[in-house]
Length: 123
Image 1: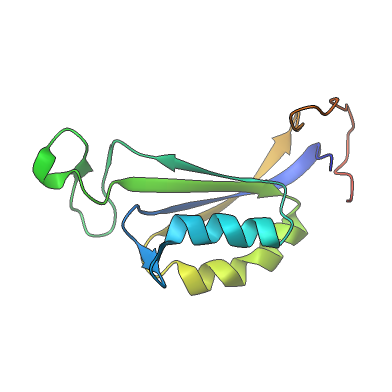
Image 2: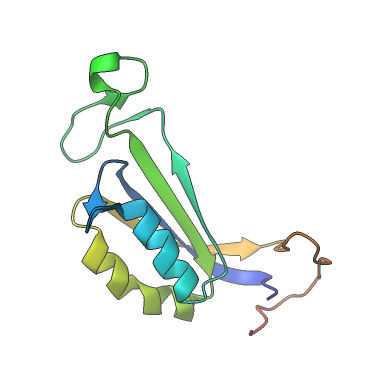
């Protein structure tokens, strides 16, 4: 699959201890994104942050080193991202979901040759 040009990014901020059916929510989101055929998903673990609860979570203090912030970023076409949003509504009971337009300059997998195109290319 090749992806270049205008796209949409969804960023999901949750806690690393958020659970869905005995599995981390971030892992469930990544697996569902993969099953949905989205271009890709990455999970990033924060070292410090706070959210709606106003509690600061940090990796610097042992007593608060649990439930660090996690960001999951997914980029694909706007239609495919919007089709995926109902799954996020089901999974993200506490957190923040952000949508923004973006431009993909390069998207290649290992062993793939890069392409230069001006539009998103369908699968």
